[in-house]
Length: 172
Image (cartoon, rainbow, N blue to C red; front, top):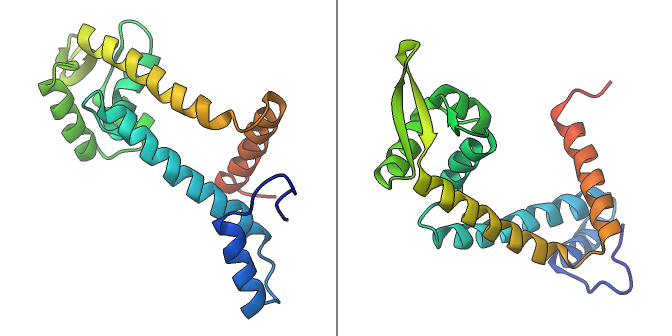
């Protein structure tokens, strides 16, 4: 793999060049892909952190609010369902819920059908905030993606989906 003539060289190219000098026997094609995926993830993660900080929340707290919002009206899930959805321990979830509840963005209430269970529900304040925060995050992502045309962005999404599927499921 190599960069196209119209794409400037980047830090990953420099790393690949260094490996080629000291270990010319290595096939570094995978490093070209995953080095860039990692750097892109870090860069965009930092940008998303800044975008969500304007709303007084972290990316992890955004994830909780977004999961409730995506669940649809009445924007209610159990703490266990939230933990499962976000792949968090119940302890990790409790800390996030405590902070978000103190901020008035969600409320916890007893399940009317099971006294041992709780419901977590977005408040009106939480609903308005998550709608604004998701728009701010999407604006950043859309701006970054504008480096590609629509067809390229679709191809990249398809290729990343295929690559991700290959890493999470057993290969025959």
